Image: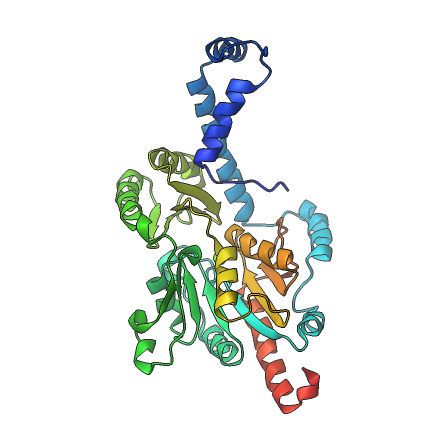
Length: 368
Ligand SMILES: [Mg+2]
């Protein structure tokens, strides 16, 4: 498996141009001479060369999306899965080991939503979590500081989760709000305290691109564009696989006109975000600091997520040497997470065990 950087950024385009201008050329050649040489050598123009590279990038997204969205596991892949599990063991099987690492430290939970707390479903508007999961999540939040970290917009994820006592880092952490004890706020999140919105100046541009994408993608059956306020998602879940490449190309062409926005690829989704250096990992660090654990050794963050965008948070935990990252996946994927859980039902089981352990440790403090 090969990890790929899927963002088409201005830096990427500049890199391509530099590559064309400098690779394998006589040192005394001027830029125009160099271009003539390289054009002659390659047999096509810089424009065509760049276009082909952009097209191959679209193909790379599609290949990566297929790999990240498997529908079946071939028997020949079983061996690979076994060795992968050795390096990324089940968080349920090694539950006691995780507890030992967390001993006498404050556990703080960071939880992705889609594919982690709720199953991935065909219609993203219907990604509901179960009652059991909501009850467990409520108990988790009673016992540990807990944040939902998601690509969804704040209003939408709150409508799914409906728990006012949590932190919400929505739009990939670009819209962070804190919990409230106000009972009336449980029905609506309007009273919640906004802690941080690092991309607020991008809102008009995001709205503009949303409208263009709606128009450009309406001819592709099943394509869905979701406005997550500070970022956009183009969902491929209901699109025939034969139409994935043409749809990705449509999105790329729109984004070409907006160098301040970048494109990343997830599970059956392309996501459009501002080019600012902010991601789920930065959101995790911001929240730890807000909770007073910036330089603390007494904190044990547990981040659970299923997607490529969650890798930024797993990397932060590895760099800090704190807590654990848990990837939700039933198939091998390259990851910086230490442990794995197969699906949302295993996530619920893991969270429930943490609640039971916490309750027993209150009764018997020496066990914690
Ligand atoms: Mg997810």
